[in-house]
Image (cartoon, rainbow, N blue to C red):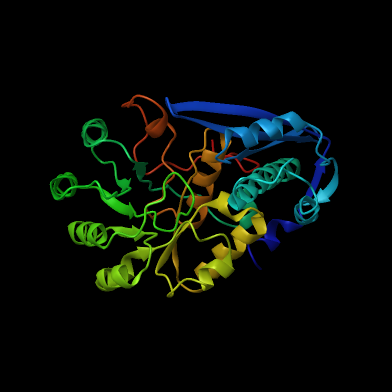
Length: 345
């Protein structure tokens, strides 16, 4: 039985909904905003998180408030199909991916609510056991911050974003520090603030300096393909992956991919991709979208069920949102699935 089939017929009663805005000032230039979706029904509450990267898009959603047509008697699957016709964006989103992020928020809240109404956990419903989650800390921080991080949490493993400004000296120091598991080249992003165009010299530099690290999202050109050919088994993909169709469309069969649940929108597409990769021995690791609320725990929960031993980019939020705290948990995270619902801890 497919993973989605195990939860698709769960009954779901929605009586009302509410939206809650969260924000965190990352810098003077950027404030991260997300929206918590709260669904109520049958004396229970379900939560999800919209990770759309646009404060204005969240403002427009909150202007609509609780006016969306969500109330009714559904199943997980019928509610998902109902959302096909609901205008979750009062105006067209700035980027197509934002539609998936918002869809994920409402569907994950619905899944949480349906499971709570049934008195069951996601793990129980899928017949899977939550396991300790190995995680990496993803950061673009300075070398000084990395030194501090490793001084406070010496066992920390890292996911770093190489940029053309990296010098050989900096790369050598990072290699000596150890702990780098993934290098996110961000060559698959287009029209975003993190675009990182193909750079054969940078690709060669980091591929050779970190011979065990995954090389995520390179941009493949005539020049970079030659550089990366000896390292092809370490190439992994993130930004292009929203469905099974996207995995099949990759330039060559992947050894592993990054699964960011919010990229998939409907839960159906996410679970289909989990099953597809498992059937073809394609390894997976989890990724996040700078979640500020319940969404962080939900991606940790999914990692604990589907790929706990991989370099999951699902570190506790404290690693990214405040001064380094020695009390932050080190990897791996102990299982913390709630007794019912789609909640972690």
